[in-house]
Structure formats: C-alpha cells, structure tokens
Amino acid sequence: MSEFVRSRNSYDGKKDAKRLYPDLPEPLEIGTYDNHTHLEIEDTDFPMGIQDHLAKMLQVNMLGAVQVGVTLESSKYSAEIAKSEPMLLAAVAIHPNEAPLYGSLSSLNAAIDEIAELAKQPRVRAIGETGLDYFRTDGADALALQHHSFERHIEIAKQNNLALQIHDRDAHEDVVETMLRVGAPAKTVFHCYSGDLDLAKICLEQGWYLSFAGNITFKKNQHLRDSLLAVKPSQILIETDAPFLTPEPLRGRANAPYLVPHTLRFMAGLMETTPNELATQLNQNTEAVYGLWSEGLS
Image (tube, rainbow, N blue to C red):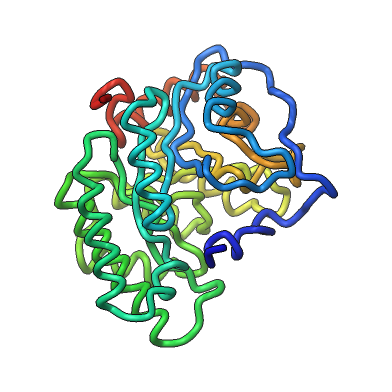
C-alpha cells in the first residue's frame, strides 16, 4: 500500500464500524461536476466499480468528474479511463507524499517525465494533485524532493496549458511563495481548500480557484465557510475528494461523486443563493478550468 493511501485512511476523522456508501441524495435540478475524485481508491467494506459510480452520478444528475492520479500508476489509470468514458476527465501527478518515496532526484525525475508524457493526452486536463504537505513529511531530504516535484509539475501544467490542482496541507506560505516565485499556471486550483481567510484573500487577488469539499460542512471548519464568502463566485469549484471527506450528515461513511448535492446545497445556503444558481455558476467555472467533457474522446 502506498504512503498516500496509508496517510489518508482516517483523513476525515470519524469512522463507522462498517464503511458503507450512503443512500442517494435528492437529484439536482441543474447538474454539476465533481472536479476532484479518486474512484480507484477503495475505502469501504463494499466497494463499487467505475460503472456503478457513474450510474449513481447519473441518478442524481451529476454531469461528470475529474478522476485524479496520485501516483504514476493511478495517473496512468486515470488517463486511460478518461480516453473513452464521456463522464470522466483526468488529472495526473505524483502526490507530494509520494515524491519522497522515490528516494533520489533521478528516480523522481524519471517518474515525473512519464507524467509529462501523460499530460499530452487530450483527455488529461489537469496536473494534480501536486503541492506540499508538511503534515506527515519530515526531514530535509524528503521536503527537498517535495519542493522539486511541485516545481516540475507547475512547469508541466504551464507547458501544456493545463489546470494545476494543488494539494496544500499545513504549507500555505510555502505553496504561495513557490507559485509567486516560479509563476502559477493561468488556471490554478486549491484542491480541497484548507486555508484561512488570509489565504482566501491571496487567491482573490491572484485569480486562483478554491475548490470546496465535504469538510466545509464540518462544524469546526468556520474558516472554510468564511473563505467561501470572501472570494468571487467565479472562483469557486466543488469536489468530493472521494472516497474521503464525506459531508455532514453522512460523515464517517464512504464518499463518492454522487454525494456532491449535499455539499452544493450547503454551500448555496451559506451564499444565500439557490442550488440551481450555484450549479450554473459552478458549471461555468469548471468548464473554464477544464474545458468541455465532450471533447477528445477516443
């Protein structure tokens, strides 16, 4: 099992004795996209296959999802499945917790070179998730590999005019410093936004996107709700980070793209708008970042 999967097993805090997928929420009247999910990661006692996930998405009127790689292997998988699946686009990268596992710069660079090749495929629309994670990574050598990996991924995104999906855990200042120093891609997304109001204001100034997951519904996360209200509606995206970060009142159960309606309705309430108005805005934002789901199919 990779370091990434090990580190995420209890990411959202609570756990039921059995990890089960929740019932279907009420379908959205205007569907939207999950811009960050990991359908290959099983975090439930009764996992679903890809086609099961897609069928449930259709039942609640979800339009599509971005399937995100975190290792070279899962990036290859994401790129391959997106080639022929109309509801899925791909993001490819070496996750910051994975980068130190390569042990040397040459080994890491060889893997990132393969990511750069995947980035040329028409259904690969983002480089991610990449960034910095100081929560579990210790030691100067490990951090150096993380930083090197992050900067190389930024360059790949810019070279291919792709979105950048940033993983930022306990590293806000260094993530911002890196992007300002080397130049952020035109379409930069803070995946599973975890920052405070100060970071939201920087994103507002820079035109970066904030992608909110189910943890915005958690009682302790007032800073996320404040950040949502501090930026322009045109800078907001929505995601599941499935199978992690299941929104309230389902926290502790396995997450999946079909559960986006819970988070969307919660966010609409905070923004004092309707779910239909928010979904319409999210669709405009998502397509501005990733393009159209109908393009580039095999």
